[in-house]
Image (cartoon, rainbow, N blue to C red; front, side, top):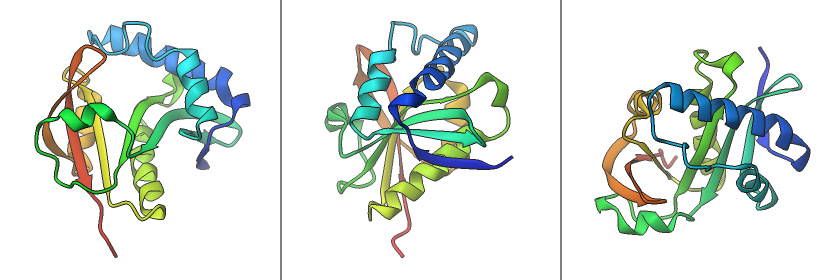
Length: 170
């Protein structure tokens, strides 16, 4: 497998949307409430890409994963019930999804590590994330990668668990 993490383009939208739809079904089949309210949708993905936030993980020419990476841009994080580890610049990860054909290969973790590399290239030493309380696979990834539970945030009417990882400043 020859994986590459890169910025998404508008022409990637059909493959990305297929992956997002698979993830929506997977969340539902796992008994999760996350992504069961019409979000994310294709227009959100298009907006991510047009704003420069969308990233894909590819295996040769196939897109196998998608995520949005934003810098200092999650207003809900200002109202954390808890405490962040840092109060400086941060990267936010949203809408991370992996193709059904690649589940169980560690690619969500690979995308999180690639996101950390994006942050470091921007001289940002904090990654903040949130997920639904019932998204067990993501919760396990955050734990495995050394993210610290910081509290809860309210996003789109639901409470999310919020995590942060301080990256090394070398």
